[in-house]
Image (cartoon, rainbow, N blue to C red; front, side):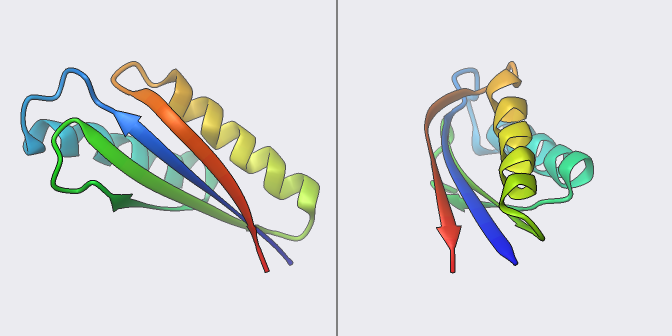
Amino acid sequence: MFVLSLEMDLHINESRSLKAKRQVIKSILESARHRYAVSVAEVGDQDLWQRSQIGFAVVASSQHHAEEVIDAVERFVWSHPDVAVSSSERRWLE
């Protein structure tokens, strides 16, 4: 069993309220769950209206498959027009 996590720090430049931020983040979370079958949650900066930390995790039977899924998720977030990625970090969990 292989478990890979990805934490991404995002900047939502056009957001002017927590409500606007949550709309963007909710879209990303639901799309990632549906498209890639990953676990995902907002894990930090919930009370800031232009920043967010999102965590993703995948459990796979091979290291290669876990990396493929997280690669696809990362490309998906990077391509989202409403956010700018400040940083991303991967961790293998034992």
